[in-house]
Image 1: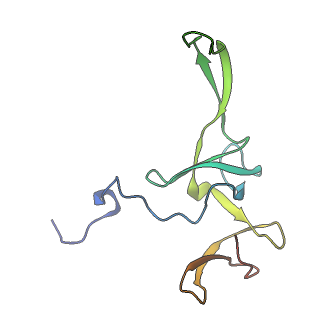
Image 2: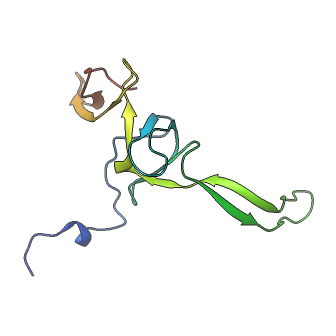
Length: 123
């Protein structure tokens, strides 16, 4: 076996750095929900997946649970599923179109996310 490690040999518990964060507005660029936009609700950096509001809706059959006063309703509920981060693109703050994201250092040395199309900073 060679000294170089492939992507599958990496430590799975170590999260990859993701350029998409919670509360970002993204557009789905592939899959059954292509073209939809929504806000990122959750990010899973270990699996490189995001949960986007109103995208990848799945039905879950739920039993009534709860002891005492907090009774949870039974039935079929709809929840958002995860989408791989490669299937979404961040929306440019200037034009509102999907754009790739670059990283740039500011005066203090902190990394800032930058739109590749307009050069506009996110955050």
